[in-house]
Image (cartoon, rainbow, N blue to C red; front, top):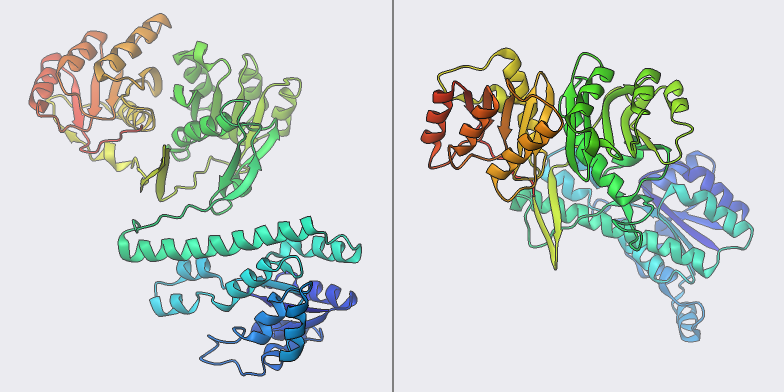
Length: 510
């Protein structure tokens, strides 16, 4: 038996080769892998002894050879193949272990196009695909994480058809993701990221309990190990809907840096938000906005959950809590709650991946765009349009309202008072309806919005929303501007003594 080992990621390769030799394999190897093995006193045959042809063109050609691919591809159970292999002097290669040139690491390290081109693997993917195609006769290994299971299967004669088939699937996933990465990079470099094809490749982080409904299946796929590194399921199993709600809450709570932000979300929309001097105060104030909707909701804590905070949150039914982390005593508080789900990122503050692009499925395809960014300087650099200037606290409330509005379903209007959201209207077909719905909900909750700051993620088309805000006691408003009736809106703000700011940036979220 012969095994061909040619890896860029050399973790565990020496031990893997040694185990293969113990099982009776002869090792063939290339370049750096050959040196790594021989330096470790592992007996190996260099590839050019097999190809009977020297490595050439600065290493561009070394494994593209019939003695290599013939040895991998011929069917052992087909008499004509075995006869032809004997006639041509092609010897079987029974195991191929290959992982590819680190293209991702290269493009992160350099912008030198010549170096990038040279780090596009050709021979590696070809060997992987050859071995995967002939998986019934050849074991294909593309990850060091599979070394142990492969050795165990060979030792115990459990390298079944299903076992080899699973390795084959992993191999084609490996080369598909690699080619997708290269194509996307080239389109980003030369076509502004919008080429004729768009490839979205994610690695499965875990299976969800089910999809949006129990009759649907679901799973979470990740980019760059984000969830593997920053999502720990401490209690309970995440569902498809949980992940969507957590995403919405995380985006809002994490957008305020190191501040003690707490966001409560129900069905993807915020129903509570606050920033106070402590996390427990922030939670208490966030809960006041809409405690009815918060029941069974998702809470994002931009910090570590203490026993005191856990005790307070445990007073009502919450389905999910996502936090930077939990103190051991906090976890004990929730131990008796069977239905609650606790997720942590394993740090001091919440972290987002800040993906550069965003996409949404539509029937028959998907729409793809650059990710939206609600930057801190949008509020700091907003243009004062009114005669009256906002106070420092009103400016802080405007910042909170603006960020929450930009991360909430359009049409959206948000009211914030003393760093806590007191009303929100979202997902309406009319901006006036959104504003009025928010005020009605606040009134029903017994919340006083007078003195609050208001934000709209898109411009107010008429002055009627400003008039309604003034009647409710709003003291400051922030919006993008850009309506043909901006002058009327500004006039209304001045008439009512409201500080009005335009950001010039719209943040629709559909």
